[in-house]
Length: 278
Image 1 (tube, rainbow, N blue to C red):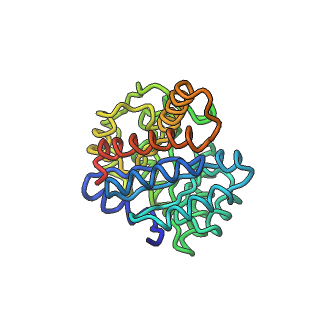
Image 2: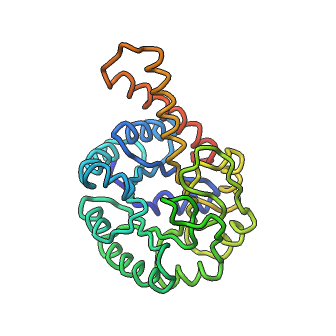
């Protein structure tokens, strides 16, 4: 199936009150697990590669090539998306590699600088039909940069979307990146205000720290794209540890990575149900 742009998934989901799962790829097993889960459920999915993951691999192209190949072979709609890119050159590279969606993260910049830089990325991407997500407000936890107490202002969000032309907006509503426990408290009143005011789909970053019931409520209240990374890495790591504890003589990585991949697939199937994705 050809790759789709993110609006192909987000626009109908927003209209119907469904969530779209967006899951971060670090290894090929991540991408395989996420697409297998989406296929089982019959829902589209977003495969995300972050700026940090690209650095880990020594460059974007190796992990991108694998993810793009898996996406193109899928039986359900799949987006390959660049996540949290602060490096404009990386945005350009992603577009050239065939990504249909990018997130330019200018949230650490002053508001006016964020608007200007994001508008430039939108113009670049729109010329070749690529979807752009941006961030306004500071979602907690990412490399210690963002302030967890900040909330996105609805009026400023409307102004930002109008000024930049972005296709989706990540907003700060109480979640925090890299949480390993699921104790985040979401500001549902603010989500409702943003949903009523902002004309594009809203994105929840830091969803790993949000309990299941609150993820469902967040979707029902107005969030559409739900980003999950740390929780699934925890799922992978737990499965690897268990397999190696039970099989201490195994050295074939396909066996323990296979156990981790299976665990992630099962958890994504469950999460897609939580998000009402199908």
